[in-house]
Image 1: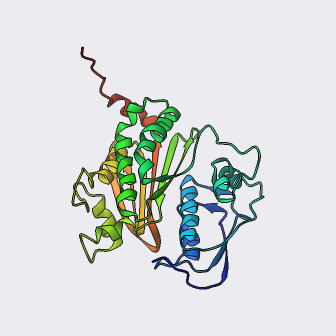
Image 2: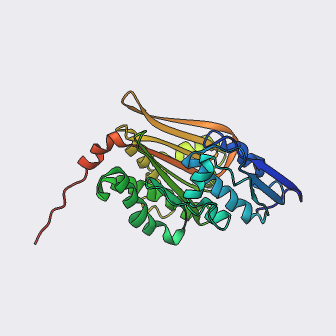
Image 3: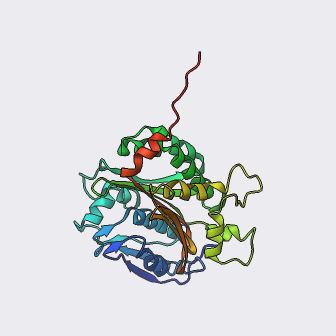
Length: 304
């Protein structure tokens, strides 16, 4: 049950750089490990932030959505700074959603940016097939079919939100970095979290062990399998086995990072000192490895 710890005012100042390494401090400042909001009024101060990672956009969005579900009031303060992070958030639609309107009349989606989007259960599959994957394929200069494996894997993440999060809404944002040769896709929900769901089948297991188990081939918490449980393992294997990118999956007090080291796909599970209230997935695709995706696309055979 969502609640409020105290009837007080609280200000949270976003760090200079907001992303995977600094998000825990912000979350913990506003939400207890038990899931309660720490104050009845929480203001978020943008006066110091100068850079935000794509993963930070979905975390910040989910953070605000969670506080709203807790019936917390609050404002976004010091938002008129001209720092690149504030401009980036304005262009991706963050302030239009949470401030009621863009900060600048010139705010618009950048060519390499997929805007901040909240997706409900009912919209998820259509959004993936008709919007996100075609956008990613266009950015990478490949046919949609070349990302079929990625599409199937991302379905598992959206299914997780649908089946297990308890909130029914996920947040998605993506950014293509041409100079770095990477495309980042971040998906998150502030829901039940993978470890808690795994413990319905395997009690007395730590968050790190539960997350690792959830990423094992064949494991599922669904009584009606429907290919569930294979998705996270396939997602990791598809991306890392041929060094096509790297992945982070964060849930509860656990984090799994996966990448290719010296030709070997390596997965590392870690226990974190703080709780991530839900599930966060970041996929980073390497553009110089795209030919392998294209080569795997089977040519369509037409028959009369």
